[in-house]
Image 1: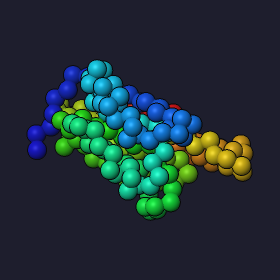
Image 2 (image 1 turned 135 degrees about the vertical axis):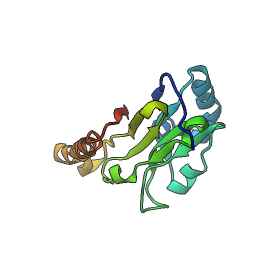
Image 3 (image 1 turned 90 degrees about the horizontal axis):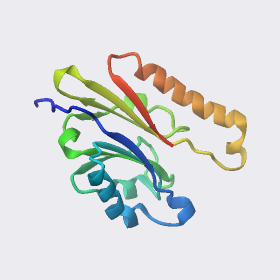
Image 4 (image 1 turned 90 degrees about the vertical axis):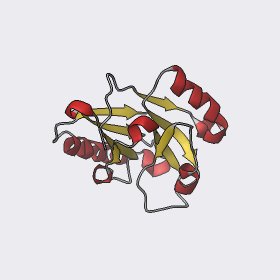
Length: 167
């Protein structure tokens, strides 16, 4: 497999706010596709997707993009609040970094993109849950942000260009 050459990697985040608007990401596919095309986005982090399950999230497809999901052991009950879309031209040079996605308390999707001339990108899509009831407590929020900090510390050990995006 020959690495792809890119002059600039365009990474964006888009909060689609499905929970508060009582809508489905499937209703927004045309708008998301237009956003990707109009802005020539290579990698897009979608937040507040609120898929009912990992299986439902796995069914979400945008033409010419590959969908990456958070790692979870629960396939039915927990909402999926974040997904990452990668342009198909880059997807074959992209690896999901499950070793960095270690905290169920803080949803992240880490992907590594290897391009020509040894350009290596490590991109993190993230969504910080506010939680409800006791999950909103400051000490619980600190635990969640510490989980992200631990992931970032491990991610920055290598020679990658590390980029964090999310909501």
